[in-house]
Length: 280
Image 1 (tube, rainbow, N blue to C red):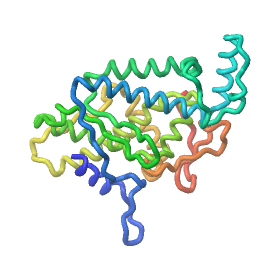
Image 2: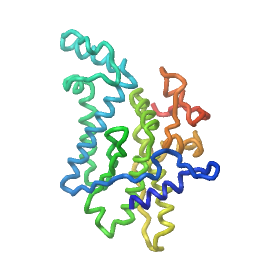
Image 3: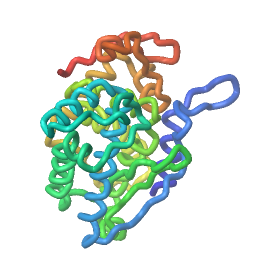
Image 4: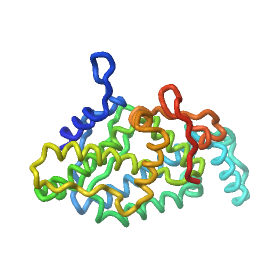
């Protein structure tokens, strides 16, 4: 299924340049490994994922909004009536925070993430585990019983199509959303999931063309949260598919003003489209 869906991604999201077809991003069409997880182990797998997402948020704060981290740490040490450590006078993405400092700044965020994924364990059939390094592709984690069930083939197609969108996301797009997150913007996660659902819909539509007539079409993810689809639709309408798709797969998102990135977004290889983040 992963191989089949990967080929569809490559077919749908390539452009002709000269005599060759070039994918809209370097990851599109690549084969992504799958890890099957038994039902009893899904909670642990999702909790581990929440921890990784929490760590990713910490790294994003250090990289993209170090002044905010420094201001919060100053308050933390004032409350402790302890001198501010010399090692924190310069804060960047390489700064190592102690467990107590992390708990003070990000403990609530991590607790919230873990609570959310545990709440949704029963509904989660699969998810994408973020890459651990630049050379890592990441891994699609799928519930084993779900993957083996002949009655779930269509739903499996939808799950794989959705998670491949996350796998093919360019790091530039991820950094764009990280910047919006640390600037306090709303709907960063909903735009990410909305875009993945948009691609899921297109890829599943293509997959259905080759299936027997009575094959049921899988339901789209996040159908109970209209803001997810609305977020993607708003972005795609503003940028147009010509620029929105390469932004997601190729990372073509930049900023004109580093101090106000949310108001100075530039989309496209040549920064053709201007956009302001509409959700605050």
